[in-house]
Image (cartoon, rainbow, N blue to C red; front, side, top):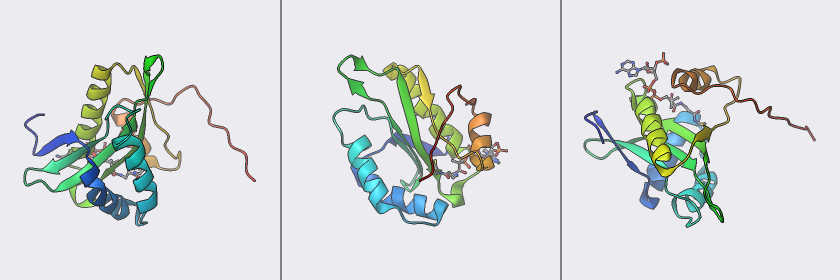
Length: 149
Ligand SMILES: CC(C)(COP(=O)(O)OP(=O)(O)OC[C@H]1O[C@@H](n2cnc3c(N)ncnc32)[C@H](O)[C@@H]1OP(=O)(O)O)[C@@H](O)C(=O)NCCC(=O)NCCS
C-alpha cells in the first residue's frame, strides 16, 4: 500500500496463530478463546465488512494487527465503527508499524462510509492513551459508567 518497510493487508482466518502469538507477547497472557470468537465475529461474519488489518515484513512475518468492526444493518453500513484492539510485536515497536496500521485502518473505514471511529482505552494505560492522542483521537463526550457487583 506504500513504500514503508512493512506491508499492510486485510486480516485472514489463517492469521489467527500469529495474531494470538503477538497478543500474548504484548500482554503476557494467552487469550486464544477471546481471539477465536473475535475471528468468527470480525473476520468470518457476513454481517460485517472486513476492516481488520495486519502488518508484515517484506518476508511475510506478521508483526502487528488492528481489529475493528463496521456493522452492516438493515439500513446499510453503519457510520460508526469501532476499533477493538491493536497490537505490535514488542520486537518491532517504535518503527511506525502502529501508526501505519492505524492510518490505513482509518482510510479504509472512511472509504467504506464510516464517519466516526470509537475505541475504549483504560485511563491508567498512559502509553496507549498517548499513542491514540498522538494519532488525533480525542476523548469522547460519552461517559463510561459501571456498577460493581
Ligand atoms: C501502542 C502500540 C500499538 C504502538 O505501536 P508502535 O508500532 O510502537 O507505534 P509507532 O511506532 O507508530 O509509534 C510509537 C512511538 O514510536 C515512535 N516512532 C515511530 N517510528 C519511529 C522510528 N522509525 N524510529 C524511532 N521512533 C519511532 C513514534 O513517534 C511514537 O513515539 P511516541 O510514543 O513518543 O509518540 C504498541 O505499543 C502496542 O502494541 N502496545 C500494546 C497495545 C495493547 O495493550 N493492546 C491491547 C489492548 S487494545
